[in-house]
Image 1 (cartoon, rainbow, N blue to C red):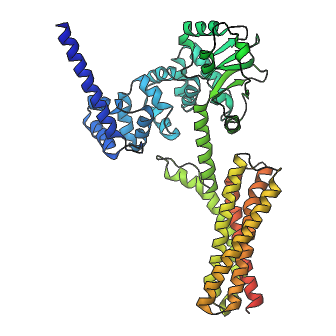
Image 2: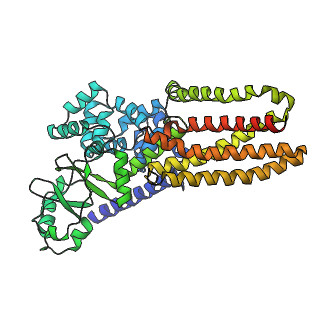
Image 3: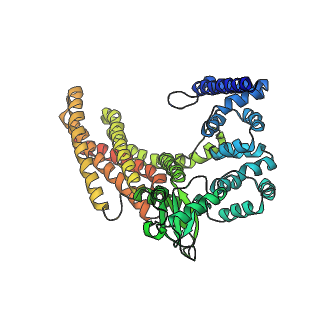
Length: 476
């Protein structure tokens, strides 16, 4: 009878496994994006109140995919889904959610459930979630947590946002420098519950708990038990607790780090940063720079209309002012345009090509500044290179477009004026695309935020003035 029971249980397990695989195939496409059909199945299950079907659907997804799913659901659907998530699952999902959606989700999770979920998270992720809570609910959640966990989160929140202190996790693996490999391994096995969920290095510390080296886990496992840690430890790159997260990401990239110890001003070890945290920072900073180049902020899937308007309209207003100044150049040459109407048709082409050339240079310069590839050391060489590029591009385009204009209008002087104006504007555009972000960076401003407005103004003004001014001198 026992044999038959075991066989039946095995059949059920196999059937359940096959079901999970089928659901996973249904959920994700070849590009690992959620399939619309799967999202529709989740919505249908929510509408029917089918808790069992929801558990099957959600159970087939990775927490990151569940977080992605939440972004495709309406606010009402998310609210209905939350009660079906246990604290352990909720803990895995919260750290993956977009900030706007997470704040909304947190409003609907009971404080007691949320306290349990936060207790399952790493200290850095837990602090991020608590930081998103409203003051009243934050107090309730912290009061429901064990004193040790509460103190850890409060200590993390004491650091400035977007610094190493907020990015780090306080759980670290450390060992005194007089230990051997065998002593370290035996100790870690005894204290397995205190180990971080993910770690790559064992930090070797002196009596004052300052890191003096690190032993990669791979090296620790390959070494003999009687070898002292001090003999095999490697040099570490320490991260000050108040360092900006963008600077931390640069150090990780430059020195190819997997993890790094975080130290207080006195040098004492207080936490660690691992590469999985840095991947998020690099993505976040990259998205910020891309959006800033366009003069917008992050409008997520659930961004409100008025919030998006408020973030974009200041730059549009500034652009309107600079465009009006550029347009005044056209007004100053109104008489010349009336005498030769074709100038009105060709004028925007010069400004447009200059704007595109400036955007190319600007994108390269901002990326180089962000990655520390461009500084005062090589600024002159970089600017000189961009000037030559602009001049050569201008000459090539002037030759082609000048020939086209001559074929269309049979006017050699008009072709020459257009070609010369184009060369001037592309030269100035390349110069401005490099100089403007460098200048803003030296002034302590973010070059990604405001460079595009000023560069566009320069290219429009120069394009209009060069073309119409040369036309007035040569053609009229």
